[in-house]
Image (cartoon, rainbow, N blue to C red; front, side):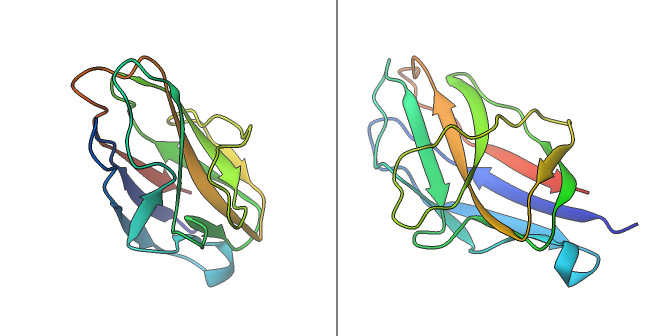
Length: 143
C-alpha cells in the first residue's frame, strides 16, 4: 500500500505581515496517487490579522494551488490548531481567489476524500484572535 506524507507549516502573525510558510513534503508511491505540495512556501491572502478579529486566511502558492492530488483517494490530515483558530478547511483552488470558500472542514486524524485529479488550497478560520497573535502550526497528510 502506498503511503503519502505531506507536511505544511502554517504561520500567522499579529499586526505584522503574515510570513510565507515553508512546505515540507515526503511522498511515496505511484505518481498518479500522490498528494503533493506545489511550492516551498505558501502565501497568505492577507497581510495581517487584528487582535480580537475573525475571518479566514487563504493559503496557496500565489497563482498556483497549495496541493495537487493525482487521483481521488482518502488521505488523513494531522494537525493541532493553536488558540484563536476554529477550523482548517480545504478548498478548491480558484485562480485569483483571495477569500475562503465554504470548503469542508478537516478533522485531524480523520480520513478525508480528496477528489482528483484536483488542485486545492487551505483556508484557516480564526475567531477572536489573541493579542499575542496567531501561532504557527503544521499539517501532515498521510495515506
